[in-house]
Length: 381
Image (cartoon, rainbow, N blue to C red; front, top):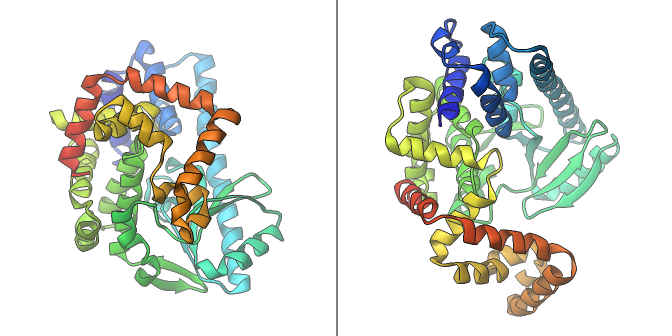
């Protein structure tokens, strides 16, 4: 818990560009520094800790100094690679005359104290569904490799291995969120050439909707809280400008509590008991969420392990249709698809993963489920 609090203070000092951070330096020891670094790395923020240590002249041994320098250099390199790929993608779409909207990190990054502070693992861009084929062919001609397709995006990789999630819609396959997300283009406006941007109310809504999607899947990462703070204090837009859309999607309370948590972490640096519990859930989840958090959420809904196991194996229609698109035209084949899924689990090596997950189900404590229940209740999820 001390490491979590110190990392929050480091992020607070960095995002606010605090010149005197001696009160944090006094809390950092050779014993806890490694733990703080590992925690930051779990949330893709190790480079921020590295920068803080360098800026505040904190003594570390040569071996650890080498590790810190590598993390910082890697973040700068990743940022430059991302910027180059982003520019290349935009040029490709401008050449063939299709509209596109940069999403999330591509928009927020420039408002951070330094761009490489806001790392990301991929580039997210939205295009119209009917432009998907042209967009993919254009990028393939520049050496991009097309990989997997999901229900809302296609993955492509640049010659330098930069991952592009090319979205043809923003839906998250969660009914209450998709009520708003399905109309994304209605909230867009042109900026220059063929590039568009979202109106403020939808841009903020999308950030919170995506965060809520990951939150109920096991965690959303500390970086999401930083994005909320940057939107409010650097971009001048808060969740309040999206109140109508957030209420329509049923996540207004979630947005309100997350905004409050971001303020407590990076403005007031003053956490209450619920904030500490909420932060622990977020820290435990890492960037993409943890199996334990995800199971705790689902087990809280399912009430017991047997019901959880049944629901996990026999997924509802809205999830099955992702893997079996023909269900859209023939939903009565759902039982047949469940049978196929069971056979795949048994004969394709997925049984080990399922068994591992089920062992985790039994290991999730009642205290963890109680905490998750309180969090979900407070956030109205």
